[in-house]
Amino acid sequence: MRFYQLAFRYLCRKKSKTFILLLVLLFINSMILGSYMILHATEDSRITMQEKMGTKAVLEVKGSDRFITENEVRKIRDMDGVISVNRMADSAVYPVNFNPITNSDSEDENNWKVTLLSYDELERDSAFSDLRYRLMKGDMITESSGKGAVINFALADANGLEIGDEMEVGTETGSVINVKIIGVFVAGSERNQMDTLPAVNRIENQIFIDNESYTGLFDNAGYRKIAVYTKKPDQVDVLVQELKDFLGSRVEITTADILYRQLEVPLNRIVRVMKLMLVFTLAAGVTITSILLCMWMRSRKREIAVFISMGKKKTDILMQVFMETAAVFCLSVFGACVIGSGMAGIMKELLMKENTAVLLSVSLQAGDIAAMFFAGGCIAVIAVCISLLPILRANPKDILSKMEG
Image (cartoon, rainbow, N blue to C red; front, side, top):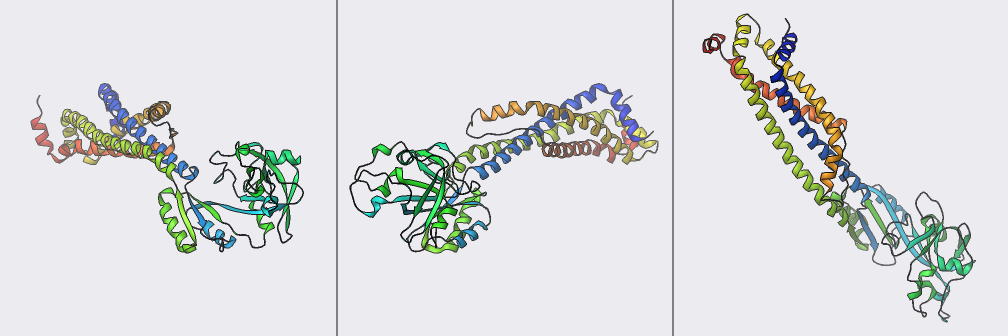
């Protein structure tokens, strides 16, 4: 009779022992699977945070003579870890087909100008991102939105402008651009400004446009400030050093990764706890399973000795015990997957009860099952080897002589 047939018959004959071993392995595998599910969820959350938390290095030109050029921006985009660059520029220009808002009687040219502010992504690094300004209607300027302008509601009302209308601005050199209004914003502090404030400095006369339109207005356009976003917040210092080496001392560089570092703390705490639990589970699994199998091997000494005395190879005996344990182990893996799938939501609620700032998406994934299968399999193999080692090393005659009855 082959070893796998003997293994199947033994499991059917010893139902109580099989059930006990199944419960032990089911508990161990469930603990391992739960630990890996949480570790996998924390790593996914960390990656998501790195991509979405907006960790950035902000470069601002110290003087007004050497702005950051388009060629330099392209080289910065190609740096390792950089996911996007938000270019920012500003300049005072003349309105062509509309009038600026002013309460001042000054004849200075600044009282006839408006301020252009250009962005790649208006929702980032602007008064909109820190909620000082709010979009009333329309759309924000994005890299995919094409050309457009976002203007203040007061400027729009005073000139009868609406979304979809076109407005023209120009420079002293006669260069003029035409942009379509795509959004209208409100600051809430328009009425708190002094009447003596020149038009160019008033909130109502701030016009946000895209960088393509901005560079079309100025021949040698440069950027006073850029924000470099990285997908590697933990290596932002390396990026800063690389930017310093590239641009030298003409720019001042600051980093903004406080939010990521704050949210990383509870994640690291969860990872430490789960790794400690995983180590404890693995150690306890090997110990408990080994003790259980050793106790059962003692009651099988006569059976094993008889097999050996009949000429059965020790490898066949080893394979039989492995097959028995493997069959029970596979059942426990299936049961652990069922339990893990049902417990995912509960584990998520338990973890987020204290840390509501971090969202963990706990779910059963193929990688978690593979990790559990490998770790649980190692536990089963080690336990079987430990339990069989004394018997396989002993002489069959000695084993038979020690057996009672």
